[in-house]
Image (cartoon, rainbow, N blue to C red; front, side, top):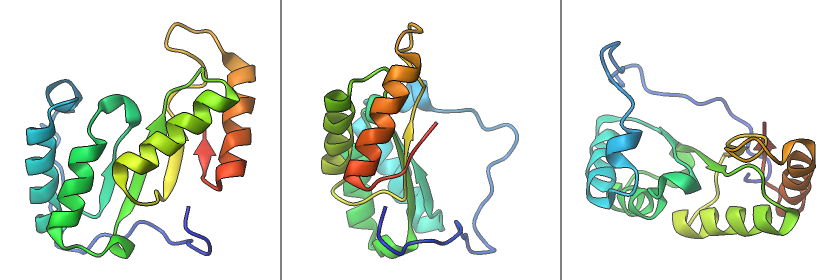
Length: 143
């Protein structure tokens, strides 16, 4: 998180809203860099300013290109990313660093995707490890 950076996510009044019929595109976009790039670039040109991604979605490099090519100043964006749960301290640190490297910028919030592994192991130990690395890396790791 950028030092001294505390602001609510603000969108212009004319920002297009999602309709109730819209479905989550994770299945179709995960790892599909062409679709992610095109969709993110179009959204940014339409005025979207809140971007949500995750290391596990495999979309961050394409999102980074779309942000760069959009010409939207980074300060106008609110970017959220997530790291997998169930990691050791060293694993969480690697995941955060990999996520930031893929995006090529800071994030406004770094979330812990799930407080354990998807198989249910990890629990309190992995949460504590993720919180520790979050404090060391000066990013917000929320559960």
